[in-house]
Length: 252
Image (tube, rainbow, N blue to C red):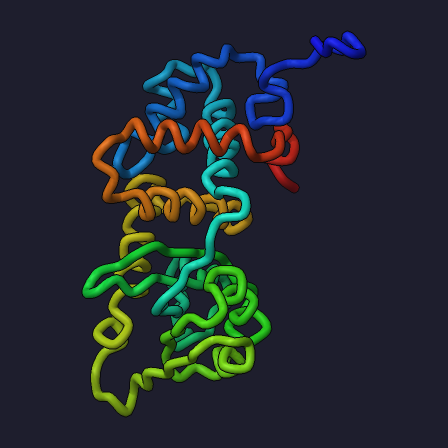
């Protein structure tokens, strides 16, 4: 209660917990279960483990938590960064290269840390033109960074945007793409395995970006030895994001 105007409000107002009819300790149980599982959980699994009567409740809660997995104002990647795209979806007979008719295009940026991978960023893009790819790089990577890409023309404007663009031609090298850009290809393989393993590939293109946010949240904290830190971080970020009404989660 405000000491000045006597207006009453809730401690969870303005967070993803706002307007929830369930007790807050149940939310904490869900967050702990989500963060303590190395590969995450599906809505069906969450419903079974925590005893939700309705599948839709577990599904909506997971989507609200995914919105909290992106920290507002997070730092962009820096140093040397590999960038490439991958395609998520079923088989497309007769389609090759960067062409697609039904698949979602996912842009990937991965920091180079010695022989390993640092932080990553993932996002769906409308196409592989410069109009689709350059804004992703600008949002994900700090200016002045070295950006490694293949010779695809969609990345040509990066040098003019303040990046040190290093082009690695694939065909003239005689080597395979995963040998020249190993980090983004490794991330793409792990992403697809996660979508198939945890979610059985049943991810609608409309919601794909939120699943990408969850994958990024987990990947960037994969070396944490204390699962409690992941729990703490997700609770902390859940207080920073705006409330997400049920209708907004369901979408069109």
